[in-house]
Length: 193
Image (cartoon, rainbow, N blue to C red; front, side, top):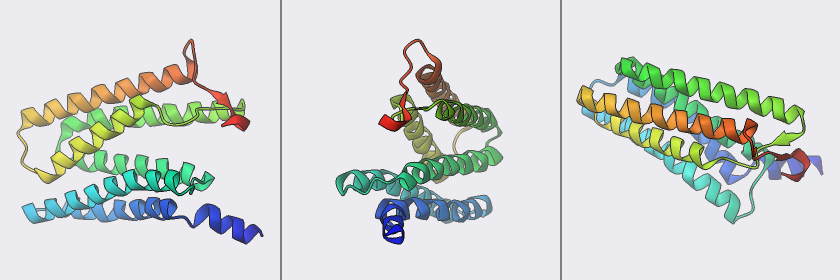
């Protein structure tokens, strides 16, 4: 019985897609950091696009086919955050202005993780992702795809992208801060979520 339930919770298509995204991270890193030709940058960008596509598909499959699992609720955001971290680090190597984005990204994620742990211990949890976080993720992925696919971007455009990414990271950080500690927090009791 336990084995059957374990397989039902772990061995789902959405979870396999999340694991696939995790496997793509080191592949992307190696290809991007060693890229010297347009073809190699295009390959890195294609890997990134496949990762984004599987991220969009896994949630839809989980909801449509009732494959939502506790493992998936943890695995999907981990795959998202590690992918974003890898992309930000790789692009920061090429474009030092993105180090500001990297610092903001790490600060936001550290805050969210700490707030999650503190509230979980109090029996509280956010019911799901917030719109500021979803918008931030979308903007980061789109801007990163552009920077990967067009390796010789004008530095002014790179600076504008860095400012845009930083603004959305701050927006998401404020949204999550208010959701956890604001006047009207969006927390629910853990048992009800």
